[in-house]
Figure (cartoon, rainbow, N blue to C red):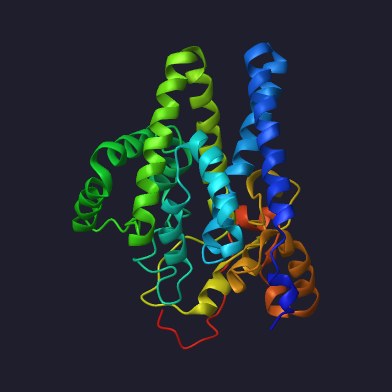
Length: 313
């Protein structure tokens, strides 16, 4: 077991990093409005990368969803970043925690394990075609929940489940009213935004699409995604996860996602402690070191490790 200090949450780090990311996004967005040529391109990149970083606090909120100390931060995120992306944090909690569940991870019931590495059509769909669609789907979800409530969403979920699409996105009862009022809050904000600043809508759509591209491009850097298992255990999560050491990790894998093996071993460790935990595990755990790879290892494909448990394969 690791030292309990790694599980201590530093709220100052959360607020500092979120506010810096939002400030960088605002500066980049303003630069896009008033800049031209290279200035516009650089401002666009700053706005996209900054919003991507801010958005990925949804991952922290998910893993700390039972921590009372993060409730105010979660509300701040939902009212700011959630409004910019139209994604309430509660939407991510169930599918992602399902992904982390022993026995479900890497099986057909895992909604976040996509077999894309050896399937070119799926790879192209997810990496190239899906990101421009996601902002539109977020608008549809916002409208559906605002006017039809959670019942409308559940009808869509049942439709997908009957067709063997495990989205894992049915909202737990305790989050339903929150997502409903947030959707209506987003709708009011966006109605005002469309009315007051219609000329900036295309720019915002482009930035959010860029955020979705960064989000999807990091997916193959964290798991093998070549085949599913009939059943799995906690060891499968560790053996199937990568910790990629490469210079652009800050860009595609913000908020600790680079240290993915350490995260799957100890999902309750806050992102700001993952670099130190990674260093300790790399120095002391030979099995962990086997999952520390370079970007070229991931591109070439990493051979599957021999099973170390009695799990059925």
